[in-house]
Image 1 (cartoon, helix red, strand yellow):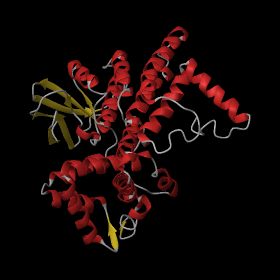
Image 2 (tube, one colour):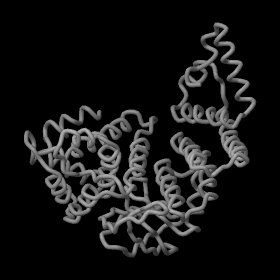
Image 3 (spheres, rainbow, N blue to C red):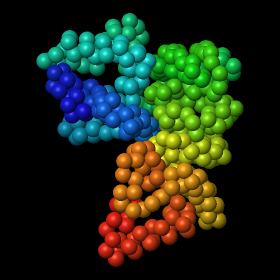
Image 4 (cartoon, rainbow, N blue to C red):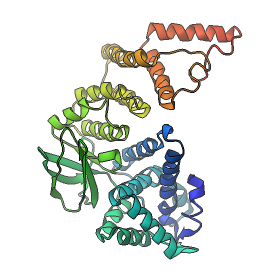
Length: 384
């Protein structure tokens, strides 16, 4: 689907120069995940697309980096442009724009862009103009351009309570780093219960009112290319519901809370609490990310030798809860026909139980390996 989309994004309409490579690759990335999700919904391709975008934020939040749209003067610069910024960030920005405009208006904008420039060349400005025309909102041009022409990740800080909030934007930076002042046109979409509202933030701050009940999710659907920070009470409410939250939103929650921790705001206790809740989420992407968050603390050196044993026990405790639900049979074909979510979650669970030195799982694997080496080729599935 990614490569076929280049028949439109690249062939039917070709960028005027390499600086607009993102018009090819960001859209192909977006379309690849979109079509895969429609073809096989059980594969949760949309979650993979968002995960790729959040991963790109790790690079984009550094002071050393590049914007999506940049001057290209040499062959080496062309090669360098095929990176996580073009694919991950670019695809996420496209998804964010589609989510803000609405699917039908977004499609109308794409069709208008294709019709106006078919069998010819086009630039980012041409695309922005088509989107703004379809949306009936000229602000779309400057908003999209602020994401393609500037490096960095917006941080949306939310204050207030009970449906009446103030949202403020700044550039995200980890602890010890001073980021330059940057302003975006951010399509902020927030959710409270079943209530969802989007608002384009172009000023430094603005009022944001939303009805509904329950925890406030400042990145509804996880499609916004931004991080958020909220008061501790709001973090705690979000964490408490992470075991049953939509997987796309858990990805956004995990990214923003981890980023808040790295910037010196959220606590390690909150990260641990979120990991435990996300590990209980039915989504394999959520549960995998839960253990990845724990691993990031370990790799950052937050556990000494004594603490490492406690960390192993904590990991084992969380994974054991999954074991009670998923079970584990190492034989090849034991889970033929099972839902992909369960298969992927089980593989992650087994890996973490082995790391935690869980005796029953280690014994099962050792026995299966011995049987395999003795000639029983069905004793051990290649996944383990």
